[in-house]
Image (cartoon, rainbow, N blue to C red; front, side, top):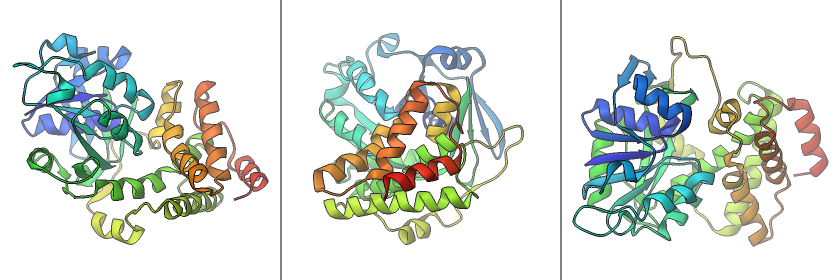
Length: 336
């Protein structure tokens, strides 16, 4: 199989780089300065074993590849706010032997949140979800860092909305050869919703600049997460417990310092660091807000973080524009 990584940033670049290292055929999809750097110097993947450079084909869209191959796997790794545009671009792409990508090729959604696979299923017949446990960073064009050891990440996979098949098992087998654990599960959404609760802290980390080690931020995150858990319970949405997640993770993905790589933050923190102009809060905190409104559960803290994160991205503020104590005061004002 050939893997086409649509969005070769932190997650996509790491998955693509590790698959290429393991001998898989990989194409990277990128744009702007990142695409230029990838073409000029290759993908520089910084991992605990050192810096790996992969010289891989880089395209901006399907037309540069011509007709797609029947054995292609599309890996959607853009932020959710960019999913619709990517799906509209790649869905109609022709495939050798007839038909389109949307009709014939598997699409794997390796993203935070739960919305992209729902968007994808409107166009693609074969959609697969991934619960992404993959600590990785992309703030410099051409460079991606992944500090996990001994495994780079754990990627639960399954067909969306549920089930498994031979295709997802083949994809998982390739990932298992590439420094990942890749359990194939019947209900991948149960793992994704558990990850969503963890991702509710992304906006908090981005707007304040940090989370770990700050007791005030951690206490606020506990309130935000509890609000999210209450919403999922009200909606009857199953999610893996923290205990189950810890049992699966164990010490398989332990962060280690990387030479020359400063400590950064999660995906939303990175979006603000790059000045991307958009952020995924609408599909993380905003997912909880949506479900809360549908099921009559107040979500003031998630609404607050969604609004503040969007404002920071829109105004192109870097991480840490709002001191933690100011955010805590705002949170106490709105309640929750």
